[in-house]
Image (cartoon, rainbow over all chains, first blue to last red; front, side, top):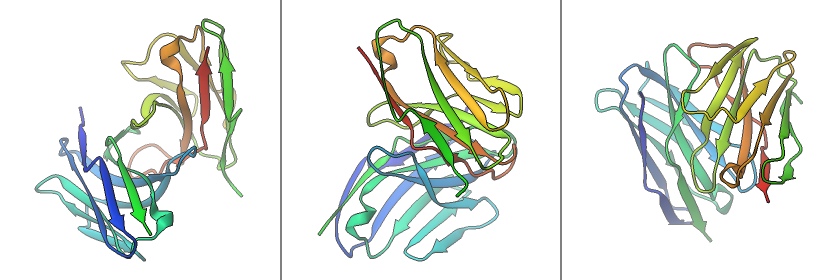
Length: 112
Length: 114
């Protein structure tokens, strides 16, 4: 089955700096890659996703890149703000089926 | 606003005492999921319903059951909670099975087992 590895497990950045979180997946049949942000005591919220037919997607300060050949995808947050502090999860899903496989999560701390 | 609602937000039960967690959705999505999330871990899928079809994960203990009486509601029943079942339980929904179906998560129910 699918296995998703996520790095780093914790990341501290200074406010205004960029943050990058990386994930690798094992199943070449995976074609949907969402990123979720989870704040303390809340459920995960989708912040951006990418399909396997594109290499990059941007939404304001957030971008995701996908390298299908290498089976890895990354989340990029620019101009980080204290409210970006949270746990971020990457995930992968196969073309057919409902199951999202999550990475282990990254604790992002933005220091002001 | 369309959303996924979980009740209660906090649930305390005793070791071995059955407990039921509730999820409702106003999104009219046909897939509903239950995840278990332990501290500092990723959500782990327990099972999901695609309409009335129940899909259990192979490693979900028999102690966990689910019911979906209609499109809007889904329940998680823990028949005999153990200390190891203390966790956050997340409900999620998605519109259709298959490609690219975004999952919307509820706020979760934190279960404490005494």
